Amino acid sequence: MFITRECDYAVRVVRALWGESRLSVSDICEKEAITAPFAYKILKKLQKAEIVKGYRGVHGGYSLNRGLDELTLYEVYSAIDPEMFIIECLDPKYNCVRDGQDGLPCLVHRELLSVQDELISLLKRKTIQQIMEEALPEAYSKQSSSRFLINEMHKIMQNRISGWEKYPHGRGKARCGEYGVQRCYVPKSIIGRATE
Picture (cartoon, rainbow, N blue to C red):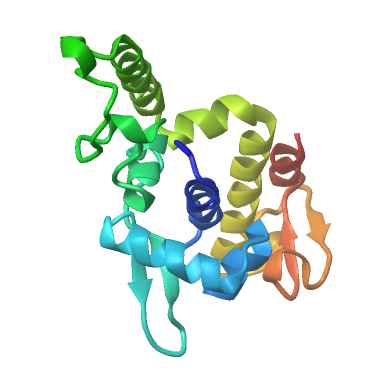
């Protein structure tokens, strides 16, 4: 098979790691509904291809070693299955008894080779980030705005001043524990941007 289930799950692993500084294998499995043994097998191959980076220890895990704006589906698939052929006879190591029979080349073989070249070209055409942005523009923009809100809250917490002191004109209150903070006041303009 040209695109195996393992190849498909490898893209899921990459998608799970997108935007994360580091994730454990259990986190990846939970996000993408992958079994742990399968995830470990995929991560080992992705790490060998330098697509992901592994961390050892108590706080270990995995992160992307390259941005999604650099990766294509072809690179992820070929990291899992370096010899991707739509049919076994396209493998140079495969000895086809029909090709060259009676001194004639297999014309179907040549056509399939052309089809495979076209498929590989299509898999290299766009980066994974382009695919995700085109497929889910609304979700992508919401994620970006949510990150903006979270970053603003972290700035407030790190500066150890309340949003009321920092933003004296109008405020919105984030519920206790929401977005991983205990208590934080943020301006209505920020909340408006994050929920648009």
